[in-house]
Image: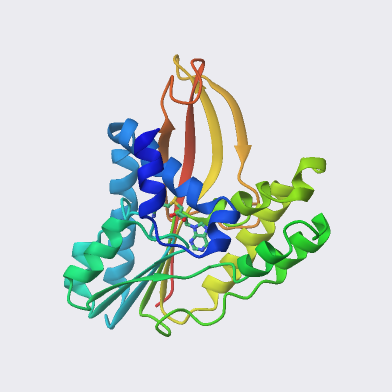
Amino acid sequence: MLAELFRYFTLRCPPWARLLGLTYEHVAITQRHRRVADAWAPHLEASKAAILAGAQRCRQRRRVLVIGAGDCRDVPVAELAALFDTVVLTDVVLGPELRRLAKRSGGKVQAQIWDATGVLPALAAGWRSLTGAEVEALFAKGDAGPPPGGESDLVVSANCLSQLGLVPAERLHGAAADDDLPARCAAAAARRHIRWLAARPGVRVLLADRARLDIDAQERELHRQPMPGMDRVRPPDRSWRWLLAPIPEWSPEFHRVHEVGAWIDGR
Ligand SMILES: C[S@@+](CC[C@H](N)C(=O)[O-])C[C@H]1O[C@@H](n2cnc3c(N)ncnc32)[C@H](O)[C@@H]1O
């Protein structure tokens, strides 16, 4: 508890990120990784390998942009820095490790606050008054604008897709009376982000959850929930399972597992 509180105050983020629960979520992810690091290791390695496969496709390697960089557990920052002139790491919350990394790199690695949905400040401003339909429309039509630093040779969306609409929508007043609102917002934000990514001229690597599974100790699948917004997406180039919360982290009855995909497009 004390460690969580301490980390919370070391984070750099805009006030809207705290209001919309993104800072809390960042701390929760960091703490969970500390508890179950061994279980996450294969997923993190598979993510890094997919990013490097994307890097190999680039004809030029001037700049790489990472969206949802978090603490870069799943991003091979040193390898990218060796391949590209500039590495731009973005998130709505910047932890001290990322800031230190950028500072020590002498300008080669940059850490920037950037909202991939483009709507979070407006959502925070209207979080008491916006209706469910208005919020959903914000995510569906949101424009993140041009990528920070300009167009890049490689753009990586790093395991953040399922969170883009879900986490902020769960904090809204309207969510209390509308159980489906977070899932509808998650779907709208995911579809919008996928379109934004597809419009980038360079190589794109999308790392994203496809489904959430509950699996018991005997390896039987108890429940499968497709991730909102992934219904019209083509099959991934690579896929694997992420043991997000091994028994008893989430439940004494089942492991919480995510099916993850990697889509590598462009060039
Ligand atoms: C599951 S974590 C991804 C893991 C991260 N790549 C790492 O290795 O730590 C999801 C990340 O997406 C970020 N995120 C959530 N909403 C975002 C948004 N609208 N724009 C950019 N990043 C966002 C979160 O702050 C979090 O760091």
